[in-house]
Length: 315
Image (cartoon, rainbow, N blue to C red):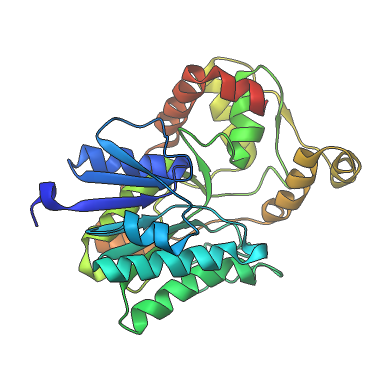
């Protein structure tokens, strides 16, 4: 199909949605983005559609004439919003005759001693609700209602990831000259995913027939311990590492008055065992190129420097 005739619709304007927009523009695609405000810090070539993505009517209108729909919006799985959003996005893509590609974070996986393939990964206790939107989408694909694929990455970093764990606890604090906070055991291997690599995977899956109907792990640079990753951030800043590892008791105590500490305590469970994603399936099908950690860290720090307000808020 003529690239100029294609319409690529991105649901959500968070870090992943923004990265998908950059990737699509680099491939000279026509792009529409959907968010509540109708405003996003994107080039004028991206039309931003104002509307609540959880509203089926909004999704039907915004996805009209779409070639591919990229579901990059995050929603709380506890109140059913994530499932309603997926149902609406699936129905809108089906009406338009578009493919739909869903990007989600695999941090609901139960960590294990060896790299996790797409088939071997299982959710942590209580994490089953977070797997439901992807299951709904793949069920719709199997039933022939829509053509779909799912991509999963690990903890995100990169431009616009100020709300992520690495954004809050590593990049914001390091660039502000404060000690970074590493949850759990900082010496164990952990996959982290550069958001631009994630975006490139989503766009590739939207282009390839053999991607449809499956879950794919996003190729990420070699797993590092959280401590080593933090050290690379400080090395890129030209500063001596400042690293804190708050114990569980301290997080419990601070969590009584500090929501950030409560969130960090919850997240720590994902860092108490090795957490490594195997992306061999994607590498065999499409190639496994990904951005080396030093290059990705430099790009992330450049974004933080260009957005000092984000750094002050998050630190």
